Image 1 (tube, one colour):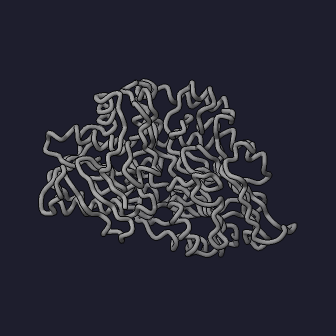
Image 2 (cartoon, one colour):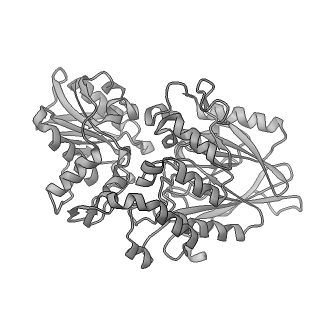
Image 3 (tube, helix red, strand yellow):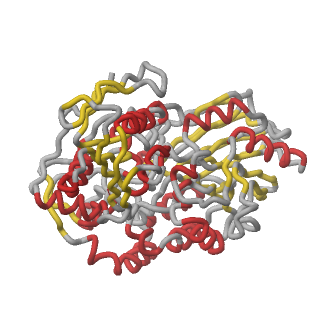
Length: 518
């Protein structure tokens, strides 16, 4: 098992020695699974049966079952929790919605989960169906759901479980901007995360609970802010930013990251890692030790046969679509979020070029794609429809509309306003070039905007194509909601992209400097 621990154990002893009354707990955790029930490649996309047999794949529910069982065997006292975003990402979600996630999470024996923004992708109805099907609490503290009948009597802010003779409080946390990221509907009102967490901590403390874990789908940066702005939180199990912590060269911080007396952990995404945090509390409920590492779930982990068979059974209706070879890529097309949410990327160029090519004859000059809608890379070689749908799983359609140059610049400013947080609103474009100055304040970062090689005219009107999510205000693009001559019912973005790759096969991915970062 040691060979699969990708980071060395980061132990933080907060006091000397452990008394007889001390309480130890292993917190096993996942986040941002995104319906990756089958094994994935190193690009977080689909992995062939041949590569899986050769030990070149990662994750998948069958390996996760084994990894969880092995981790539980290492501890006499453990819980398994999730940091949100089980929904969306592959055809399994498109076809089964939350049913497959509920089945496998029940099988794994989760003890709790927070609501991720993607749990709202199909509105409160699908989330309610999922919650009715699982055997564990689903939590969200920073929202008022009293006006939403489907959730009002079901979705709790916090809960208490018992393990090893002790009470453990759990609090859920969801992105405050979920109304911009998904479709929660008008009846769910989101609020400040720190204030919401503190309110629940105070309630739990009054109940005599002195060991408190926040399950947070808010991102690594927000988790650190919550830890600094609250008291009484012992552990934050994170999600949303797909952050790897530990000693690996790709890690962005230590595992755990300590803010005061609060231990913050996260385990990347897509079932590639299982987080394993070992904590010890003194008799007063103070966290005195926290250590652990994300465990890499690679090809050395034996797949649970029963789960392999069940996943294969569920995959049967999907295979005809996703196994269809639609094109060929001459090289890997880069769609990793760490790249596409920070700068121009080849997958962003492909998607934006594909959109613009489809509608340029309608007088459209600019294509605009949010990087949060780009979910994976594609390897060189044959490209299947399943791979395209893994990159573009949201069933978005092309929207065409007209806006002024002034509105277009405002949209670009919104797109780069949360660059430091790795926000999915970062834009990928076609027909346009621009310069980003990250040293400037948000709202004043964009310059040298060119459309079709000419400086943008703030008073002129431009034809734009984007996905319908962005056109309707998703990712903070409210300025597009009032666009002129809007039509939101064009062809599916995944189909448009697949057809463009096919028309240009073997497709040669590229970047050309359309976005300049300063």
